[in-house]
Image (tube, rainbow, N blue to C red; front, side):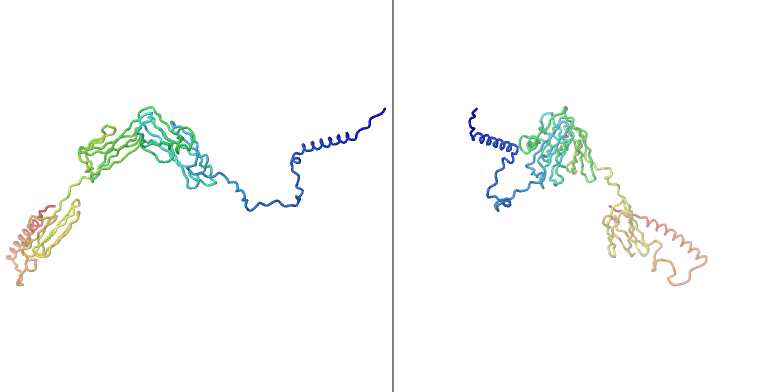
Length: 426
């Protein structure tokens, strides 16, 4: 059997195909090697890594922890339960930067109706704020919580940016976009429900009272009280002389109005919400009434040597100042305080008189008169001018009896003269 001679090309083609298959299998099992580019023929294994050029700046390091924000860029989320008087707010992109702060207030009002009507008066409020914090305190004050009392009558509750409380709320003075959750303005910095509420189921009524006090100087104090009601009280103080003053007292408040006597002259009437509360006149308290003033007692006494004047001023008297002018010698001016006595002496002489002027005033001059017993040159009377012996015996006894009688009469007259009184006006 004759076989044809094999061509040498076939084994070579088979071998090449086998080598290609092995190379493909090796590449699939080692993708890193398959994709790794071949080194440049000129690259040397010992060559150092290339250095960046001077024009290239290094990348800044990543910041550590959260960054701060200004109050204008702060963003919040909030909750609000107006009927329960509760609210909270959370700062979501803080903390605030140093020197920055943002206050919030939850306020409940007493309102005229369940709809939006005015005026409305503050019943309760709660105020708090976010401030900048240190790095180690970040997150410790990320949420603020608020709680207020809500009246049982018609009410409005507002949660607002800022700590400025409006009282009362009127059509011209409102929070507007300060309300948390407003669609625009500062209120839009917080996301959540509308943070305002109107409700209630009964009319709000005041419970006004008044206490009137007067002092010793004529000033009158009106204590206007609205302690137990659930609405503001509108007081009016008026007199029949044309004076009129209106005062609004908020719920659970007391206002004091002080007026001088001229302002409240005449009949006074105090009304609240159209009802009369008090009518009367200004009267000083009983302890201010001036007590009776005691009158001074004055007396004088003549001796052979002097004219004595005595002034006794009682404890309930008043301070007295008078001048005592003698007919001979210098006048004396003295002041006698309550509860004190004063004695004045004027040397005796024939025809001596003393005139009293001032707070004390005599009806006429006070005259010095010699004692009835008489006065000798020594001023004591009696004795023998010639220096002879005294008379004795029966005649002496008669003389002695007569002398005793004269002395007794002189003593009586002396006492009578001593009790005379000065007529005066004070």
